[in-house]
Each structure stands twice: as structure tokens, then as C-alpha cells.
Length: 530
Image 1 (spheres, one colour):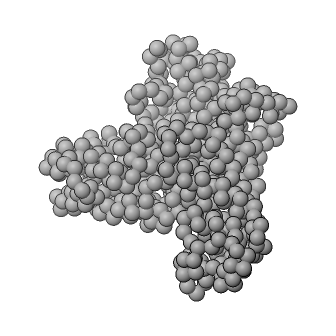
Image 2 (cartoon, one colour):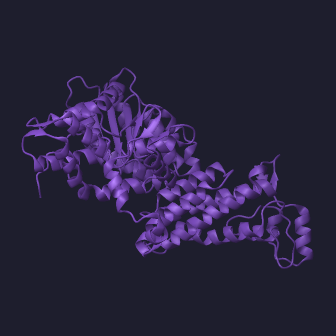
Image 3 (cartoon, rainbow, N blue to C red):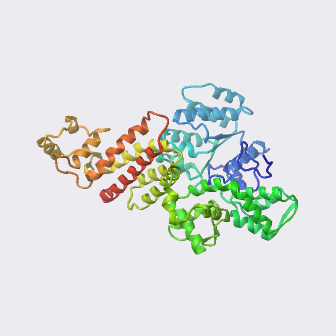
């Protein structure tokens, strides 16, 4: 394997080049008299991990650092699945970080105990008394948030720890923390409010960053035109720019680099970048992709109204540039990737012509379907958007969230059909019992004093929407809603108690489609009543 001048991915974290503006902001925020808690946000391959490792290195080695311990925890691997495991792992990571200057506390945290949270809290209090401070850098914070199994209790505990003067947190994720929270109950935790409201955004390199890169190859002189070719190919997105420079170093040992040579090196980099560009492209929603095609057709699109968020996503990935208020300058490397895709005349064949294409592209079709739904309940929308993000790589993670989707759907139904606003709870009307009794419907007697729970709620919905014996009593929801909700109950049980470690992708797609259509029905049937 070639010894690359600019390492891209690999088994070890490469040194940081450039990024001094980002580093300066983070150091200033973390070393001031009352340091901030920070969240770093950026797409995959943008270099978040590189920056975090350099941050940890500088704060560990600085003579005047306020931190007596710095831990860097990669949550993207061996991600804790429960509150208890998370806190135990945090105690273990903290123990390692404390070895150098707080050996006694490190030893204390090594010993497993029943209440890891209490142990961590006691150690942080002791460190405060000694005038110390801990910086906890949590990389890959998307992973623990994506499983939906960590509860508000954990986030509240982390908030209590983070409020101590002896602890500061830095998280890194692909989206903001609030966008990633899967559990609606967890959204109510005050933990999310402790962070600086302006995330540290990591995206494309700037002019100063390119200068730092070129300083590593002083034997090469890129003309202004050559640098323009590099920008046009990559828009400064780190993985693209670095790979293009690697190819340049392999093709040219020294001297002046002309635009033609730089353009050739960018072309040589494409085969190495294709899979990465494909991943970045698939991370974009259909709406983002449609915007990019508009930019390709029109040359430039004004960044106004609802396209602002989509434009930001494309800019962050280096797919386009933002010049003033115009979205323009599609990356030539992305253009080459798109040129490889079959033309629109064979779109169906391209998207669904084989099993692999079907599995990869059905997500986009369902994203479009979700985008068509008007007046969608906010909680259901968040669940479904996060669920779409689980496909096609993590279908099992989505199935675990079907429980929350069904619970929210039923809550909307009860509030529309049978809600006692004075007692703030659902109830079954007395006249319904009388009618069902006359029609010889099977109705549990305990429903008269206690609202049904679990699967019995689906039986109630069945009765409300009409059976062979009884007419429909519901004012808003229809039998369509019951059929979809009843079908989801099976998926809900499977997601909570899977019998197999292998979750079939097609099965999860079927559940997702059911969830979207149920949400669409409810948006039409009950949206105005809640």
C-alpha cells in the first residue's frame, strides 16, 4: 500500500491539518472562566474525530490547562445499550483518564459497584475540592441516541454531573443532539439545554486550511489555476480534497503544478472516492437531491424559503458552494458520480431493478411519501424521520421504535374520540357499552372501570370503528386506521422482543410503510381535533 502524504481514514487517527479556526473557538470556549459544554456537528468523513483527538492532545499537554484529566470516549463502537451500561462505561473511561493525576480516584472507579452514577458523582465532587477539572469528549454520540433505549433518567443524571464545576462535556455527532433524540420522554430532559446553542460545525476546508495542507508539500507549487481546479473538484470537502492531493503527490514529485495536472489528479482520485461520495449522497434526503439537480440545471438557485436547510446539508458535504445568497458550483467529483447513474428514462430499473437496488432506494421513495403528508403530528414526524435514517443499514433499530410510533398514534386517537378533558385521561362512553351489549359483542367487564391496556386497546379500536355486528361509533377514525394499527401491533411486539438477532430488511421496510400510512390517515382524520 502506498504511503500517503495525507492519510484518509484507516486504522489510526491522522494528525490534524488546518482547522485552526475551529480549534481556536473550542479552546476559547473550554478554557474561559466559566467553560461551555459544546456539541460538534458534521457529516461523515468531515474530520470530527481528527479535531477531537487534537483537542484532547492540546489540553493534555498544555502547561496552563484547567483540566487535570481528559477522556476521549468513542461511542461509535461497543455502544452501551442501557442506562446502567452507559454509566458503567463512563466510570471505566473516567478511571483510565484519572490515572495520571488522580490515581486514587481512578482505582476507586475501577471496582464495579451497584451505583456507577453515584461513584462518578462522588469522584467529581472530590476533584472539585482539589481544584481539578475533567473534560469528557464523547465521539460518535449519534449511536447511543439512535437506539431509543436510553431513558430520560440517564440524561437527567448526565445533566446533574455536567452541572458540577469539575466536568465539561464535548459531544460529536452528524446531526444536532435534539434532532437525534428518539425517545419523546427523553426530549423533555433538561440535559439538552446545557450545551452552547451554536454547535461547532465541521464541514469544508477554507482557504487557510488549504494553505496548511500545501505547507506539507513545499516542493510543489500549485498555481492559482491549479488551486481553482482543486476547489472546483472538491469544494473543499476534506476527504475529497485530501485524496486529490494524495494523487497529485503520487503523480508529481516537485515543481509547478498546472491546472491540467491538478485536474488529472482529481480525476485519478475519483475511483478511491466513489464509495465515500455514494455514502454522502445517500445521506441526503430526496428533497436535498432534487435541489442539487436544480442547481445543475439552472446553474444557481437562490437560498430562500424552505430550501435553506436542504442547501445547508449540500454545502456541508461539499456538493455545492454558497456564494452570497446563491447555491451554485456543483462539485465535479459529485458530477462524475451522478454521470455514472443511469438516465431518468430507466429510473425504475435503476432504482428497483435488482434486490440490492431495491433495498437501497426504497428508503428514498418512502421519504418522498412522508414529505407529502400535511398536518402531520410533530412527534410522529420526528419518529418517522429518525426511522428513515436507520435504513438500510439498521432495520432492527427502526423496529425497536415501532412501539413509540404506535403509542403516539393511539394517544392521538383517544384524545380525538374518547378523552375526558377534566380528568385528563381516556374513557369509554357508557352508551357504547350498552350498544355493544345489545349486539352481543365481547367486551371485558373491567373496561367499565379501567381503560384497556396493551393489545386490548386494539380490540377497543376495532369495536369503535365498526364490526359485523355493530356500526361505527368513532366520530373521526375509520376502519382503515384500525387495520393499520392492528398490523403494527405485531411489528411492535417483534421489535421489543425479537426472537432472532437477524432482522429482515424487507420486514422492517414493510413496518415503516405501515407507520407512514397510519400517520397519513391520522393527519387527515384527527389532526384538527388535537
